[in-house]
Length: 354
Image (tube, rainbow, N blue to C red; front, side, top):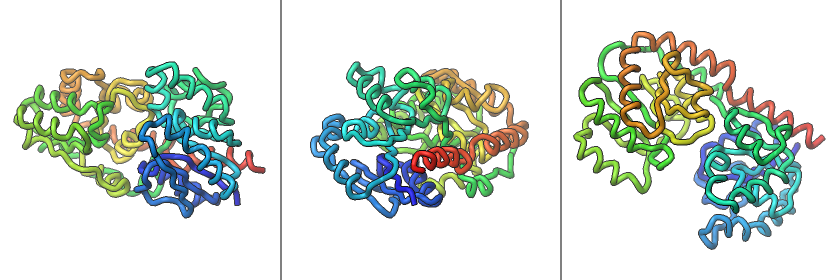
């Protein structure tokens, strides 16, 4: 049985899904994480520490702990997630062979921060044998630091067992437009643009928005609701467990995301698989899946008026939601089923250990 050491954030649902897939398909899987593990981990978990609280310093200090883990577990493949952190740590520890996995912001945002950030990315990707990405935009960002022949696209899609249960059946053409915005309250997801767009809409649309998330801007958002008299139109809700939330998506009509930067969002793919009408920002990661006016709406990043107009247009298109939902589900079934896409990566890893 091949052994896989996943190096990733132990709080992220993506990490849990990733480890679960490889355990289910014949890999002895272990997780190394410097973050406190709040997900259901694989059978073997190797916790690390963050003694300084400074990202680059903590990864540098973790290299000896990681080398000890490798000596104990003896993995056939090292799989670090997030290029600027765990893949850089794999380079620091001089581990091989490495299949690195990019998550999006590590290559779409971090290179713009400083020369030092770019150097860490360059060294990590030069050292890696392969790098996985989930869309063309991220492929191109990775290719600025790595040979294109070392990059493989693997869409982190919708699990088959959920896809078959999450289809929306009812498409009401009257009553409140039920909108869900599940990406969170971080600045990159721009919740304040959503709130201001709701103010601009006023009473033109009968709607209710469920906005999910928590964090440092929670109080500011609540104050924004109060000032704009939106308390009855918007519910601010905590995140729910992944599977429970994915199966609840069919209760909504519209999926909304105001992300300033993103690769392929699993939340968007799950919404399309559920039959929701997507209203998302006009960024490369979304343009791969949404054609404005055909199977959803795109709007300009950071533009509340453009978002309000997109929601107006969506409300006028309600009679077509059923047809659009069927087309979107068909595309997800053909291109974004999690297990089918991950099987390609599994096959690659198996060739590396034979």
